[in-house]
Image 1 (tube, rainbow, N blue to C red):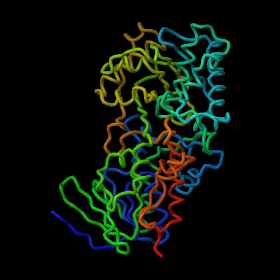
Image 2: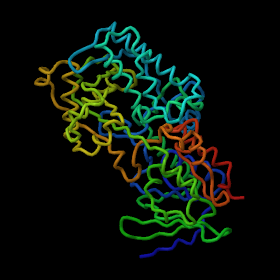
Image 3: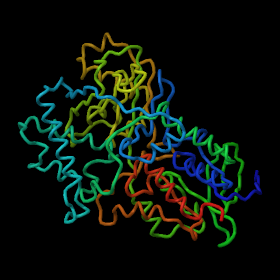
Image 4: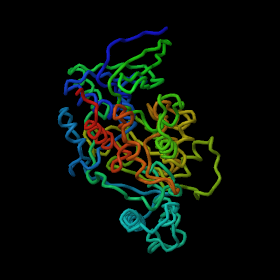
Length: 473
């Protein structure tokens, strides 16, 4: 059944994530008639806060980076009257699969890792080919990563270096060394919004709606078209009931994730995207990052420790059964955050495990209960010893993310440019360019050169779009 909505909006915003709702708030406050269309049954997009634990746990974006360094997201949260908490310093422990690592060795491993990571981002790389991977520098036989280590300790250093893949969203062998550290990102102090990121997106929506913005949930956009150079743009959607809706607006801001843009049919935009834009969308990489959250009745691990890092049991080249969650989890470094340490207010006996790109897509395709059980046993074995598993109760509640198979995300966020002659940071600038004489705008973390892959990129991309023809003239 076709339902026609005759109202012509000033702007239609595609997506009710952080960037889309920020845009809706700004534009509706200026007097624009704004419609927000979201395919999910909720707002927030990749800002998703789980409330099934004693206190909220973010399963998507988790931190505001650069809180004390002037990050624009701080202004947004303060305008919404949302406090954010900077975690206090807590101890961190380093483990291998067959036991703990001495304090002296752990200190040497961390020092070497910090130095080589800084070196890879700061050194002059203009002479380096864009086809050279980041791994070539980090794992070079003369790399500072191995300074002062015995030969049998080198694999531990390599395993620790692999934790970089969590933030990168890609393997070290995939990321181009030349572009590592490119741009001017907000870094430094991390902060967590009180109540989680989804509280912020809910308040962004409330403010936008108070200025007249309208939200449509459960409507997947099927096409965006410009029937005439001067007439309104047309956005068509499908609802779960099979209803086809048709909306018109003078301008459209597309905040759909890059992974979604990579999966839409060629007819999604009419007229089609210019070939250079289509090529950049296709070759810009979307990373993967999974999270496993285990909630317990009581804390069985050292309650004062804020973070555990468990180094991999296998060499990266080892063949593993990719249907076995225990094998997958043992093949990568596991970075584990404890919510019991008191680093943030309202401590609770919950562990969050970051799963890097090396196995995240495999983990997210497995049965969540099997993944949680394997993670539970592995953590106990590495932290307390295998025999302790008999006296530790299973988690009361567990969650495993599924971002890589989510049809409204298809991954985490964009990654730094991968190896290849056709890729560079200029791709993110290309993804930001408006089309159709400025009437079709694009925003989201993947459209900001400096802050891609973060909520800051989502916000900054919107303030840039706000300067285009997205406000009634």
